[in-house]
Amino acid sequence: MNTTELEATVRAMIARGKGLLAADESSGTIKKRFDSIGLESTEANRRDYRQMLFTTEGLEQAISGVILYDETIRQRTDDGRTLVSILQAKGIVPGIKVDKGTVPMAPGSAEKVTEGLDGLAKRYEEYYQLGARFAKWRAVYSITDQLPSWRNIRLNAQGLARYAAITQQSGLVPIVEPEVLMDGAHTIERCFEVTEAVQHAVFDALVAEGVVLELMVLKPNMVISGKDCPVQASAQQVAEATVRCFRRTVPAAVPGIMFLSGGQGDVQATENLNAINAMGVQHPWVFSFSYGRALQAPALKAWGGKKENVAAGQRALLKRARLNSAACRGEYRPEMEQAA
Ligand code: 13P
Image (cartoon, rainbow, N blue to C red):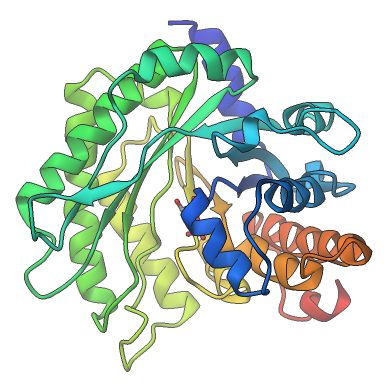
């Protein structure tokens, strides 16, 4: 294992005041996003959209890395440069989503397991050549009164751990993403309970698989109320519950915890991250962001699929990236929404 290179990649990813842009939507997911602006999901439109995002001037001040999808890591701009080279020229580290999505754990099961381990080491040879220096694998857990089951928690933890080990052996930094979904009417306390159980199982499996904890990044959900819960926890409550949960479960050797947004509103995701970093407590980890929707939603809307709106889309992206950068330092203020 090339520890020096992995170490340098981790340091770049968690650089102070920076986070990741998750732009690794699969073809199915990006179609849903494009549907919201009435745009057809063609290869050219997907390329134009990602080109718009990546060529944003100044993006590197707030974004340390971008997670790409298999199609995107091979695409070129309209003037022939690879999208990867645009990022590299800004000093932004390219990464790649390598899981192949989820399938039911058993026929008819509501629970999901993630696929994509077969041939993974071989796939990394090409991804590394194409410029990827980190990778992402996502497991999902739904909350009900009974779920997730222990079996589901264990299976997903094993998948994440095996993936993380292969990733490090292949010279890339693994982002380990166990996502406890916000869907449902559950309370923040229930989210705490499930997230705690999930993280315990994930780290148990990572250690058993020999994953070097210093050379990975965790991408978890925040501990938060279900979307349909009648009582919505405040940013302060989310911050306290989230930090308490990770202090119980995440070894101090892990350098960075970079949250997913998971359906939080864009401003809400910034406020919650800010509250976590403004607690005035020393933590062993960098708390930062790896947002998809919370960074992209305003940019997608401002762009609307139109060439003449590229600059507006980029302004919207840069605004959210900068405000999240401020949140990484605990320096975000609501007034900054207008000022930006
Ligand atoms: P969201 O921030 O939209 O949840 O996306 C992050 C991600 O990468 C999900 O896998």
